[in-house]
Image 1: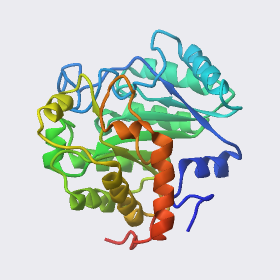
Image 2: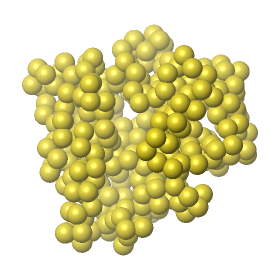
Image 3: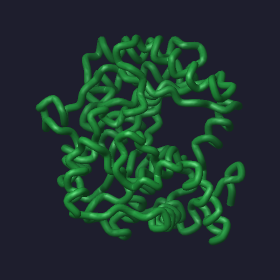
Image 4: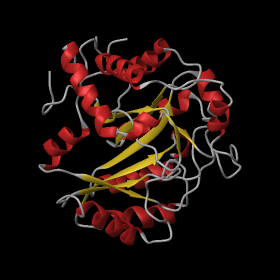
Length: 310
């Protein structure tokens, strides 16, 4: 089975189906922080998180949201003809702030006539009732997606990466978001130290049974300035080769529900911060090799999916 020539249900395919055109993301910085950084839960963030709070590609937070969007659109238009965009609040935890601030930055982003939807990266433990009501109201104006950083379902790994919330918190957040018809995208990390292939496939199986609309299958990156980098450089663990990663991600796709949209299949950490794996910088090569390998194996997303029944 193919989705517009690809062996998986790609974000690009979904966006063209929904909006009738190519859609581009503009990565924004809403000036938030994170409970894992401000002392509420911790001071150093998750073990893999860089100083940019996963927003290393986001715009300059000293600019207004309108200015950030313009800057990002101008950059994209230097290479491509682009008319439709998603405003992606990427840096840190983007529902971790006062309601007045959240209302201000989100409303400003949605006011741009070329912004077709809003995507908000956050944590499941930062979705109080006021925040949910705000997102509900915004979703009535334009589509709002909420991206949740789950990474793994396994308690031992979650403690190791300093995630800071229980799996039940994630489940409650998904339930409350879907009650309000907000689309949910889940971030996972493949290759976390101590996790086996079976552990990773258990996370995929678990997500098949949740009411989620999208997933990011993120390759583990080792970035400068993170606590994970110190462990990696000490020889505590190894990262995947490209061949190992592609074999794993194909297996994840085979077991994943074909209804879930694939928002990411690898990752491309900033070159000036990336320690390993260096091969991940060649994103186009990685994706082309993945597509070729799927054809060789005659496989596709959902080939081994057995349904949502428990």
